[in-house]
Figure 1 (tube, rainbow, N blue to C red):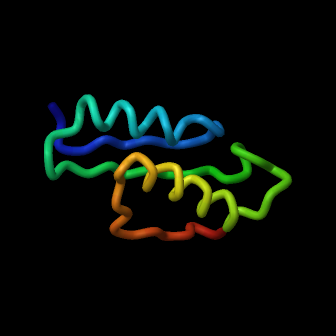
Figure 2 (cartoon, rainbow, N blue to C red):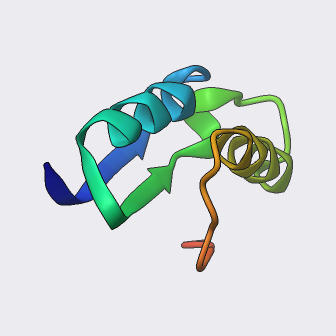
Length: 73
């Protein structure tokens, strides 16, 4: 079991996979740090919409986001 899971999400189904791996490997009260590269998931959609969709997927897997930061250039 691990304290923290880190993921760099660049594919549409990757958030779900992160959730599955976290449920399996993450300790109770552990945390996941997830970086979402919106342009790789869908280059035609607005980044804000992609972030919202990925957060919704994680919430459906009982993740509770503590913080969300945009790293705009």
